[in-house]
Image (cartoon, rainbow, N blue to C red; front, top):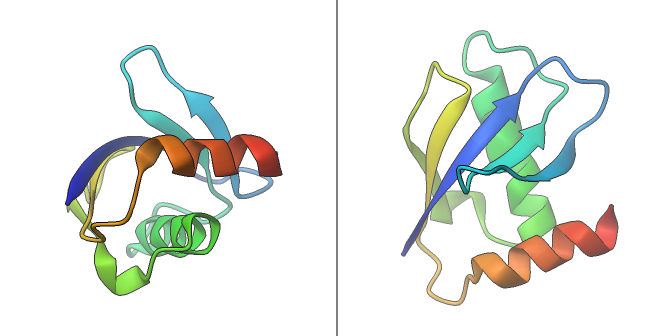
Length: 91
């Protein structure tokens, strides 16, 4: 199990990985609006597709109504380093 700090920028023109911030969090831009949990759903969906991790293995454990979130991934084969390389290769 891994926990990842994520900073979300909602209402962006595309869903995309921005990069690592100085605080160590991963910055993600999302098209979804931050209302009724839409941005949270979009975040899990985007990361699930990009990182090839089942949605059921991901959950937001902190920051439900904040731009700064903590995401928990319960897939033992998941590697953040490998996931970040996937982002860099796709973008």
